[in-house]
Every structure is written in structure tokens, then in C-alpha cells.
Image: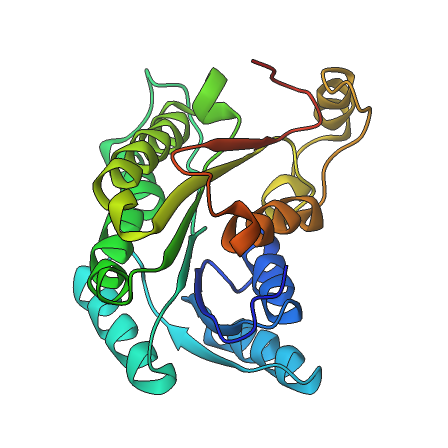
Length: 247
């Protein structure tokens, strides 16, 4: 799955799934534009990629801010000449039962998880259309497919990403640009590390493969969808959930 010569922009790249995706894409030969809010963690990631012989640069950006997104993409294109691959991974949670959920928590999750994807796609699409090649990969969630109590904002944002994926796939398919989604299930990350052991054990009981997923499991799916081997796949949601949800 060589991505040599490709340039990939990964949002939410400072930790968790985004960080692992950035490392995997670099390992496959892509130049990585790593975007997130935490400059220190981004610099550590870029240093790791550079020390392994890859190419990368960090871009501190709040992906929910339209002007910051526009500026970051413009700077990345000026630095690397193009963006071939976009991985919309940035995401947050603000869990609460809907009866008690604050409007600010609803807005924050939707803006970071869904609106940011629209903003990033809008900025990279022109160059992809011009070069007639592109890969857009949105990281959604199994809870965007099946819902989750206490996560109305998160589930809605992730379900919205699935609809966005299919709409974009139809809009740009004629220009050899694919748009797909990866839907992780229960993945061991900093976001899930704070959950109780009892919750984790109960979750594993719902997974036919009998284990929690790893960021590497998700990164492998992302790398595949970014490659030429996935050139005839678009508008698809690739579930990486150990069988937690089927069909």
C-alpha cells in the first residue's frame, strides 16, 4: 500500500487514533501534515516521523475555527505543494443524558466532530479536483451507527459524518476522488482510558472477537482506504469494531 509521493493531512493527530494514523501513513511513505491544538504533542509526533526517515510538519489549529482551518491548509499546501489525503479524525466527547445536556456541550461536540470535517473538506477539495485524485477519510464511530445513551451529541455528530461521507462521495466521484468513513468500535485510547474496569469488561462481552481494539487496527483501515488498492471504494463505512455491530 505504498503512499510514496502523497501528502496526507490528519486532524486530531496529537494523540490516540489520529497520532497512530499519522505514523502509519508516514510509514507507508506519505508526507504528513499533522494538525491538532496541542503544539507540544504535535512536535513530538513530527520528531518521531522525521527520526524514522519520514517527512512531516505540525500545524497547530482548532479545526472548529474556519479561519484557522483555511490558514492551516493554505500553509500546508505552500509547504508540501498539495494535499492528496485528508483524514478527518478530530473529535471530543461531552457526555450527559440529553435531559441535562447543556447547549454549549451539544454545540462543542457537533462543531469539533462534524463541522470541522466540512470545513477541512471544503478547503482541500479544490486542489483535489484540479489534480483529479484524492482520498477523504472520515473517522466516525460505531455509536454513530447504533446510538449510545448519554452520548446524544457524540452519536449525532458521528452519524452526521456518515451522511457527509456519502454526500461528498457522490459530489466528487467523477474526479477520481473517493470519500469513505472508518467506524471504530471500542478502541483503547486516552478517551476510553478513564472508563471503569466494569464498563470495559461489559463492553468486551459484546465483542465477538473478545478484545478491545487498538489504534493500529483503525490506522490499518485508514491506510488501506488512502491507497490505490481502494480506488473502487467510495461512500463506504468500514466498520472496525470486532463484530460489535454487524450488518
